[in-house]
Image (tube, rainbow, N blue to C red; front, side):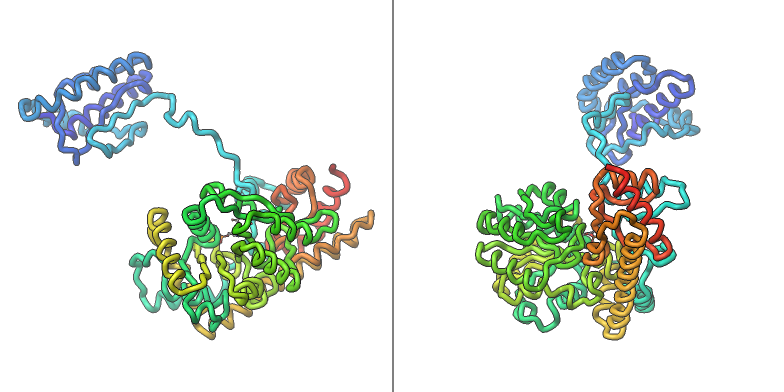
Length: 520
Ligand code: PLA
């Protein structure tokens, strides 16, 4: 009887032959049957295959129909033929593996037609990501002057990536303890979930004491936002999410992919290069009752403009009046002001009013854990009972998406935030990072003011907060920054000051002045 492996080898031989004889083997046929597949085939199939060196696509499809027609016959012949496979397989033992065909069969019989028309013909080329795509373009540039101010990633004064000392210490602790790599529960590491909620709301906050927060570890800020979006889609069908104009570009992708409708509220006023507070309030007021209002907890991305404490109170008033649900994105706690508590004050203000709210957290920036993908989604509910149910549903959403979250970053955060000595060290390091960004911000402003002969007022740069500066450069001006000056930035005019050094401020000021005044 022909075994599955004999058939497999015969088909591979067929390809080998085609390849060696320079035939157009693209149109040959292969019917792989894996070893694990117990079905034995009619000998007609390997015979057909062995003889098949087909020069045209049309013939290939004819052969495919023949083979397909022959396939059902195999059932009838089961057990009747025993032609042996030893000769054939010894002949083929010297086979070269054909790189063209690496297909594994997952079904009972898997037919792959090796044609040059792809089944994925309808898949169009996606554009590069507006933020992460900038880093790809930066890597491809060989200029010595190049500067990557695209993605918000902290660099040292030497423009090198930075791993925090407390992170190294936490990792050493993990090695010393010889911790294992077992799966985490779906909701993540319990020690992480505890400290992350405490860091956000403050230990002893009534929402924590009363067990009214459903906290689930997420794949950093993005993954946590995505979980929340899925929860909204499932339990608030048709509810709209209001997002600021402008906002972090990925917010729109997240809600689009989760099929959650969104619209924008006014936020940035280009005339004042500040917050359009009246516009923001009236758009939130005008939204359908019960909408979700996405707010940047601190260090608004991309503008770097945050509401004042008084303005936050008014925003909370309107949201309460309209029965909306606040949804905070806290990606920069500690990075805006250098203080973890000050940067969480907006969220705490809403929680203190007894409102139900959602908060996505990220440790990418404040602990420099970008690639560890560590963050959380917190849902504050009006009762412990509701929180338990919400948590159960978040787990249900997470399980089919990624099953359970990664452990490494969660342990780092738990070790740092949960240990008083490491926690204090972290705060010092964070102040240093936030301080370096503030120094660079000041130097950029000084350089622009000194160099700009037109006397433009650049003071808005000093009013902005966090990693970014929203320069006001248009798309073409931003393109000039990249094409002429090798300064990589997003096309909305945002620059990441975390990727800038004091030494490069003058060069950057020249580039900005040239782009601003000479390109329109
Ligand atoms: N929310 C906001 C407002 C952000 O700016 C970012 C990151 C995230 C969430 C998500 O970050 P995380 O998934 O790594 O936790 N924004 C970056 C990077 C820093 C990015 O676009 O992914 C930015 O350059 O805008």
